Length: 280
Ligand code: CAA
Image (cartoon, rainbow, N blue to C red; front, side):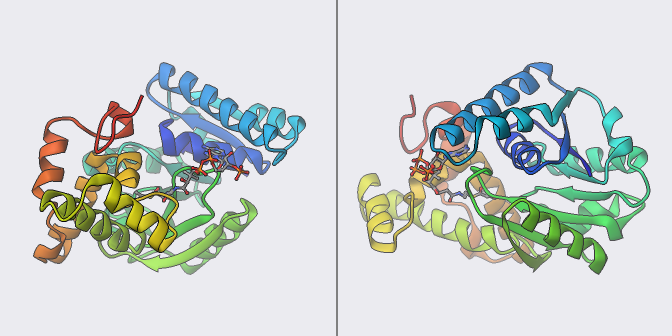
């Protein structure tokens, strides 16, 4: 099956990487040629890391890279069985992309989105095929994390869900099917924890290192919540909390004022070089 991945950022290059590594032909699509070049270099680097850990062979690495072609337009979508959209987390942008891919994707092609919180039902509503639209939410770093959160929109066909479950297993991932409500499951539970960690810092209950150490060593989390917030991007955390707040109308989801200030000051975490921590 040919898979088209839209967006060559962190999530898009990871998604292209895993599909290509498992034998799929991948069209990696981005408006920016420079971003595509950077994505291929990142995939190469991550494959090298897997080779050096003996997780894959040099031959698999080369086959993976050979399975990916890059495009700055939607021309490859016409032959695809699956499109996975992984563009920036912006509702208007995603709705616009879905209108365009609906126009060029063949009949029977599944249109999936890697959105972390935007309603699948809303995205599906701008297409002429809402039954073929589904959430396929990978976790960062995609080559490492085992979960694929699969989100059924209001109209998603059961057969489409079954296909995406089977495909996720083919990628050696563990699929979990959930329904389309704000934040789905992953971020409905993760973001209030991160927000509470930020509130704990804001209210002076403890310092940065202490908050992260409590959660790392006390709860066996691989990263503390503030370190994880930097890794995800503080703007992304803020946007997801707003989706939860607006969607449920419950003040418990309101982003901490410290988070809002940091996003306004462009302290976005790893991607901007500074968030709760300084990243070199
Ligand atoms: N590609 C391929 N392999 C990678 C990789 C990448 N991008 N990044 C790390 N790895 C591999 C390493 O090679 C290493 O492999 P081995 O175990 O075989 O040695 C393994 O992953 C661990 O990496 P490191 O030793 O470099 O570093 P680490 O032990 O500190 O782990 C981490 C790094 C995997 C990121 C770990 O800290 C972790 O699991 N953090 C939490 C990640 C998380 O919670 N992700 C979800 C974020 S939420 C999200 O994505 C969704 C959303 O909607 C916001």
